[in-house]
Length: 212
Image (tube, rainbow, N blue to C red; front, top):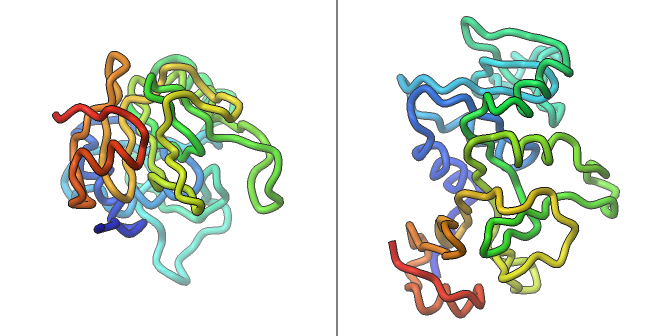
């Protein structure tokens, strides 16, 4: 079974972001999407800590310690980019001014419920952060995650068992094995990167997948 690398997963999301979109990239793997946005396609990147108009990650040695994203990673600023107050940034998120947000997740349900926060691991941010505001405020929510846990359990589920970040908010799920669209309670297989076929992916997820 074929599996996309993390870089390939980020590139797969990037190719689906349309011209003129205002996009927030969540902490972790979603931040890699910025490095694969097609040249010449105008996409405006927003960060909840008060930056808009970000570019790709800086070259090694060219980092500006005062220019970071919400995950405290160094970023670049494109011409026309701007800084603003944290409250203004959340106003953009809550006011419906973002076209797309890309978030990681522990679980996504068939109906688009999102669970992506916890208070346990010492190496993780122990709070929801801006994820609730993004999940509800963005016009489209893309989730970027491995399809299976290390134990082989599907993260795309009938019903989330973890605390929810948002209800019925996820539009698409991009994974290392396939891309899914969630619509009207159906899980539509848009792209099978694994080559395993819809029946095997249905078995892995425990869901009745629908062909595009």
